[in-house]
Length: 313
Image 1 (cartoon, rainbow, N blue to C red):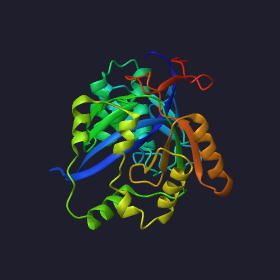
Image 2 (image 1 turned 90 degrees about the vertical axis):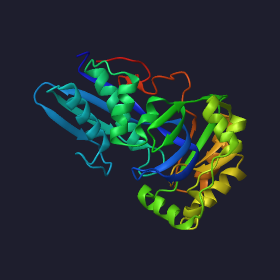
Image 3 (image 1 turned 120 degrees about the vertical axis):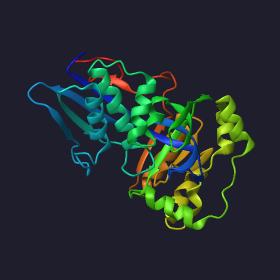
């Protein structure tokens, strides 16, 4: 083992584009999505406990299950089973990413657990090992091992890292209510007609896996917006407000309920978020898009006082 404690930051994500296509033979929806991390993080402190075996998960005041109903618990359990390690593990999860918000918080927490616990136990899991393990737990988890930017296909199990040139800031606006993914898919299926095929530019991205922000802004779309906005008019209002405050583009992330706007720089993003905070009680973040200098390591590992450095205590 390489230490007794590790701290991992788990980033949120946004869907810069998400197309819901046909149904796959296994019953899952066939997706095409361009995903990118953003600099909002949950924090996981993972400790080895020499006094007992088994897992103990705590989540502070967050209304989350602390057993197999939590992806973090299942991720840690999977690592221990596959490594045949009979050790005690304590995991303290501090939630910052809003729940059921279309930001991938639960999936990122699970990915961070896989990454952190295998690192802590000194296991030599490859990137492929992590992705395969993640795919057995949840469809969005493999993306976080190819972050910060990737094209995601199928039910989330096909992930190809993508090069996105340039920098942007993002304003996330969460109106404070959850949208359950299963319900969102039901609304989508019941309301739309024929499925539109992918466009030629999307196919070019698949081939080249490289694009600029100007190109991204031209293809941003979310198939969940047409069925969900009539149920939640506030989402359309937030999108229109972000655009009126100077966003180059705005979109619902995943199946919601978070809406985000893309801004050229920090100043524009801060001005927009300040105006939004004056009159609302929404949760609002103005942050840079996720770091692009850690293509094979989307997580920052270290002590709580200096989480940007690798340091096992």
